[in-house]
Image (cartoon, rainbow, N blue to C red; front, side, top):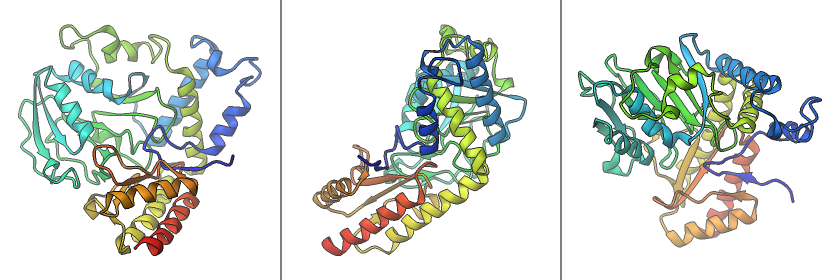
Length: 360
C-alpha cells in the first residue's frame, strides 16, 4: 500500500527522509550491531545521539547559554503540574485560556496555589486570541502561562503577551519549530514532540537557568524537579531514547532545509493555499478569526453534520486521512505540520473543490 497524506493532529506525519534513514539503521546503528531501541542510555553511542540532538536544537532556535534543554517524558500534560511545583514560589500565577489544553493547565495549577485567568476566548468557543497587550497581571504572579498554538481550535498567538516583567511559560506543542522564535522572550518553552518533531513519548523543555532551583513546593516528587534533570543532563533515569534519536534526525532535516526561516516559508505557502480556498468556498468555511489563524491546524466545516461525515469518509478513500475534527468541536481539521508536503495540501484542496461541485 502506498503512503497516505496523514492530516492527524498527533501523533502526526514525519519526514519520509527521516523514516527511511531510521529504517536503514533499525538493525544496526552505525556499526554498533544493534538498534538504538536496544542501546543503553549510558553508552557512548547514545550519549553522542542526545548531545548532538541538543546541539542541533540549540542551533535551530538560537538558544542562549543561560537556558537549559531537557528531554523528558510524561507529555505536555505532566508539565501542567511540574511548572507550578517548580515555579510557584509565591503560590500565584496568571493564565491566558485560549483552548482546552490551557484550561486543563490552569485547573491543574489551582491545586498548588492561586491560578488566575486574566484573559480567555472561551466566550466564542476559543475561535480567537484575546487582546494581550495590556493584561491585569498580578503584581506577585510567579509566571504568565499560554498555550501558543491551539491544536483543537486552530488559533495561534502571533504576538506574545506583555507579561510586565513576569516569566512567560508557553506550551508550543503544535507549533514547535514551525517558525523562528526569540527564546529570550520565554521563561519556559515546552512541548510534546508528537505533533511536529518526533514520535510520541518525548517532551522537550527549554528553561531559563534562573528558574531552576531546589526551592520547589513541599512534596514535589524527585522526578518532577527540573534541577534533578538539568543536573543529570536529561539522563536521571532511562529517557525515551528512540524518540530522542528520531527528534535528532528531524532537527538535522530542518537544518539541511535551511532552518526555521525556510520551514516557515513552506508552512506559510501551504496554509495560504488551504485558507484561500476556504475563504472563497460556498460550501466549506473556516472557524477561526482570520488574524488569529494557525499555520499548523486548520479547522473547517460545511455546516451540516451529515455532510461533514460524508466528506471525511470520501476523503479517506482518496488517501487523505485523519481529517475528522476533535471530538469536542466536530467538523474537520487539517493539521499541516512541517513534514506535510505541499503536494498533500494541494491534493486536499483539489478534493475539496470536487466535493463542493458534487455536493454544493
